Structures are given as structure tokens and as C-alpha cells.
Image (cartoon, rainbow, N blue to C red; front, top):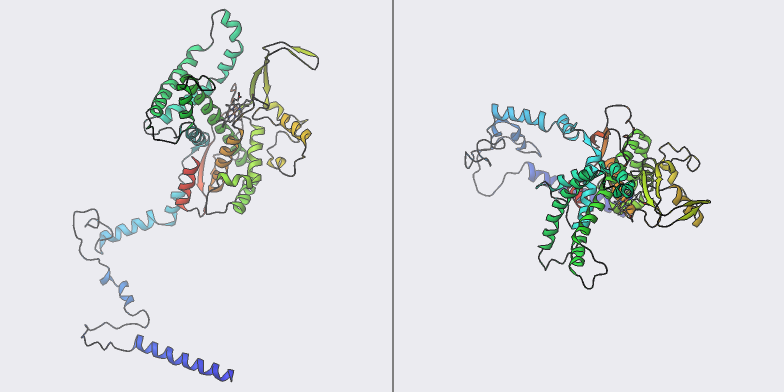
Amino acid sequence: MIDNFQEYLILIIICLFSLLCYSLFFKKPKDGFELPPSPPTLPIIKHLHLLLSVNFSFRGTTPIDESLLVGSFGFFTAPYGDYWKFMKKVMVTKLLGPQALERSRVKNERVDIGKETMKFAKNIICKMIMGRSCNEENGEAERVSDLVAESTALTMKIFVANMFHKPLKKLGISLFRKEIMSVSCRFDEVLERILEEHENKKDDDQDMDLMDVLLETCRDETTAECRITRNHIKSLFVDLVIAGSDTSRHATQWTMAEIINNPNVVERLREENGAVVGETRLVQEKDLQNLPYLQATVKEGLRLHPPGALFARSSREGCKIRGFYIPVNTPLVVNAYAVMRDPDSWEDPNEFKPERFLGSPRSGQEHEREHALKYIPFGSGRRGCPGSNLDCTIVGIAIGVMVQCFDWKINSDKIDMEEAPRALVLTMARPLMCIPVARTCRLQVPDLEMSLNSQT
Ligand code: HEM
């Protein structure tokens, strides 16, 4: 019974299909109109083949000849002929061909990685302090970047001036005063304008950034916890922008150089990124906690190349250390560079091995104290760097995105890791210049723009 039913069903389907074919291909319309004689049609594609004929390669006239939009100069509206053929050839070979697409990827422009990271870090820090990044159009951004660079170049002189300040003050000598004050005055000019802009903000603007809060404290002489002046606010800005952007710049530059010199690290970073982030969006701040190898890479970069290689403290009162008496006001210089390459504390201390920070760390207070004493890129204790978390985020995202989106071409086999002489902030002897080659990843452009905006 069931078999018979299936046979009937198949028969009915064949009949219906035959009727459909007949009405589509062979039946003439019976609507009473006399249609123009039709050129012969082909089954299924009917007249479609005529679009391939030269005769139908025109688009008709243009509404306004002189208009650049659908006018007679246009390619879209151009009649089929020599002009159209020439433009089509140029377009296909130079604009839309495979090599042209490749060219859009490989700009062959060398990028100064340190400089770009500095912009990225500076924008984040400025937004946090004053609610906006520095203005690119009126030269403000460039002025602040130049002043940060000049300040860093002065670090060694500031260090020396600080060391000899007390004895020389008695003689009326202030080392490097002119150079230091020149930078300070120019910072003051930029910052006075930014403070005025904050003071002129409309009262109904509820969005208070750090500068607004400090200005309010500055005006409030009666109830404020602590008396602060305009100069305090300006100095805090200078401290944070220098401490944050220049260190991040050097940290990223050194770590990228190590990564480029170690292709196995690149591979592992991409593997991890592919599994956690995928290829259709950019790595973001929220992903960092799930990217242990990227975190370990940033840590290892900071261990081998701590931007704050030397940092200074001073004793507030006399004390005894291991039986030696240390008088009050004794300057103390910590050599973080040497501590983090000490062979007694680190296996293969001069090798770049992010894996050393993976795996289950020994837990317990004892281990944490030991680690805090041997891993000190951000110093340690009360006066340790308050920006360490922010910095790991900035450097992590910068490295994550650079490795995710580009291959980095260099002019030689390996990057020269030579250090600049006499720099207090650990600097590469030559800036890291590379050519970014976009990887064929399927990042959506709006996603790319959104991620970059949300991260700067
Ligand atoms: C790679 C990035 C960074 C490195 C290597 C670094 C390193 C250091 C070091 C070594 C110190 C001295 C610590 C000590 O005396 O024990 C320090 C202090 C400081 N850092 Fe950072 N830092 C970085 C990023 C940042 C960021 C992003 C900020 C904030 C925006 C920041 C703000 C500060 C401040 C305000 C101090 C002075 C803290 C105090 O005296 O109490 N740093 N940093």
C-alpha cells in the first residue's frame, strides 16, 4: 500500500514539473497585446545572453552633461568605446587587480613603533586626566609629545642635578636650571590653556574628569582635604604623561624587537589569539586576562629591558642595614636592570623566554615576597609605580594588535638590540623601524574602527 502511494506521488510530481516547464519555455502569453517580435530565446536564461552583446553595452544619455555625478565625464555613464575600454583596463589592472590589492596592504612605509606607541599611550593617559586626547589639529599633540621627549632626554641631567642639589645650593649653583626651566615654561603654556578650557566648561556638564575634580579642590579653600594650587595640577599632568607614555613607548619597542627576533613567540601569540579572540575582531582590554602567553611576553620584555632601569630613593632617617649604618638623606639607587638579570635569581637570565612566567607559580607569602624582590620593573613597596596595571594593559593591547594584524618586515635578519649609551630610561640605540604588512585576516572595518576608538 505504502509502495503504491509513493509511486503515485512521484507520478504527480513529474506531471506538475512538466506543466511548469511547458508554461515557462514554450507557452506564448495570451493577454491580447501584440508584443514586438522577440529575438529567439534560450531555455532558462531567455534573453539574458543579449546583455553580453556589444549592442547592449550602453547606458543611454546622462541627465546633466557637466555634472561630475552621473554626467558625461563618468565611467559608469560612458558610452562603450575607446575611452571606456581604456578606463576599464586601467581600473582592472591598477586599481582592482590582485597586485593592486597587495599594494594597498604593503605600503612599504617604515613605521617607528616607539613613536606610534607613544601616541597611543599619551592619548589614553590624556583622556584619563583631562577627558580628551591632545588636539592634533592645533599642534597641541605634537607640542606635548616633543616636551615629553625633551624631558626624557633630560632625565640624566635631572638625576645629576638632584644628587648634587644640596651641596651646590649652598654655593648658589643650580645645575642645568636653564634647560629644565625651558621645558617647564613650555609645558606651563600648554597646560594653562587646557586648565582655562576646563574652567570655561558649561556648569551643566556633569562629566567630571581628574582635572575638573582637582580644579574644584583648588577653588575650595575651606573644606578641601589638602591645599592644592594650579601648579600642582600642572605638575601632576607632567608627571603622569611622562611616567606613562615614555615608559610604555620603550617597553613596547623593546618587547616588539624581541618578538620579531623570535618567530616562535610570534607563532605562539597568534595561536593563543586565534583561540581566544578569533580573526574577525581586534584584541581588546577585556581579552587580556584570557591571554596568559601575551601577558607573559609583556612581563618578560619588562624583565629584560626595564625602561626604569635605575630608580632613586633616599633615606628619611638613619638606619642600620646588615650591620652598616646608613645616615639620614643617603641617596639610594636601585639597579633594576641588574636585579632582573641576576643569574642567581633567573635561569638563562639574558634569554627572552616568556614561558618562564607561565605554569603554576609557587604560591604563598614567602614566594610572593621573593618574587617582589627579584622582579622589579615597576619598583616595589609604597613608592612603587601606581601605573603598573595600566601599563600592562597599554603594552599588552599594543603588542596584541600589532601581532594580530601585521607581519613586521625589517631590513636585516635580526634587530640590533644595542642600548643607547648614557640614557637613564633604557632606550634602543636605534629606533625600531619596521614595515607592517597586513595579514589576511577577516577583521571587519567598522569593528576595527570601533575597537581603536574605544582603546584610545
Ligand atoms: C612600562 C611602564 C612603566 C614603568 C617601567 C614604570 C616604572 C616605574 C618605576 C621604576 C617607578 C619608581 C618606583 C619605585 O621607586 O619603587 C615608577 C614610579 C611612578 N610611576 Fe611608573 N612606570 C610605568 C608606567 C607608568 C604609568 C602608565 C603611570 C601612570 C600613568 C606611571 C606613574 C608613575 C608614578 C606617578 C610614579 C611615582 C610613584 C610615587 O612616587 O609614589 N607609571 N614607575
